[in-house]
Length: 176
Ligand code: HEM
Ligand code: HEM
Image 1 (cartoon, rainbow, N blue to C red):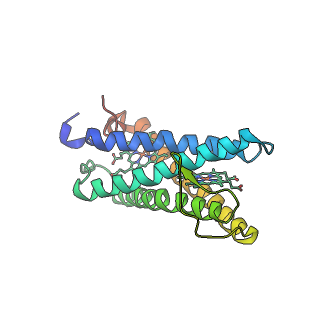
Image 2 (cartoon, rainbow, N blue to C red):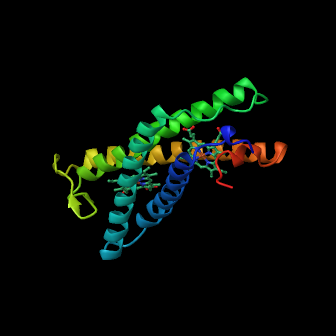
Image 3 (cartoon, helix red, strand yellow):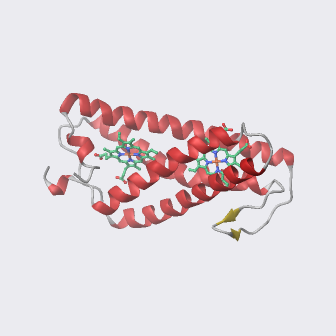
């Protein structure tokens, strides 16, 4: 494939790192809430928070990098509505990769468990409040469903192109 049609190595690295981390967040998020109270549950929550904050920081870095590096133009053959849908989903991805970790952090701030990141305790600015904790946990859950729907649409788009035109569009985001 012509190199001008492909994403750069940095864009690929940032994309696939986010995919792996977000997959881990879903896997941990869905299992940790069912664990019995105890050290294992605490460790899983701490790991979830650490990976979540990493995704937040990585997304800020990615957005900063992205404004100065335009993506390769989509092939001419792609119809207008598909371009609009793909771009809409990508914008919402960036929004959700910032908002979702913030909702998790705010929700955690209304509990007795302070949030730590790589051993550093983040500032405590709220007192435990079960009502606000429940509200933001609920929003964090809604955010997870929204993010999952975006992933579904995005992957469906990638796979539909794979089926119709071979690996062309997918290869834009693959290093080989
Ligand atoms: C992109 C980033 C994130 C994703 C995709 C994500 C995803 C999830 C998912 C799928 C769950 C399970 C929801 C359920 O109960 O069904 C969850 C729970 C949770 N997340 Fe996250 N999360 C992210 C970031 C964060 C961050 C940064 C924090 C805190 C600093 C956090 C704190 C929590 C907590 C405390 C729960 C448990 C809520 C409860 O007890 O009901 N999350 N997350
Ligand atoms: C957590 C899951 C995912 C997220 C958050 C995500 C996010 C994104 C974003 C934001 C872009 C736009 C990059 C830019 O131009 O700034 C993108 C592009 C792309 N993604 Fe994903 N993605 C995910 C999973 C996947 C998966 C599983 C596949 C493969 C099946 C995939 C294939 C692609 C491809 C091929 C492009 C380039 C589209 C084009 O040709 O313009 N993504 N993704």
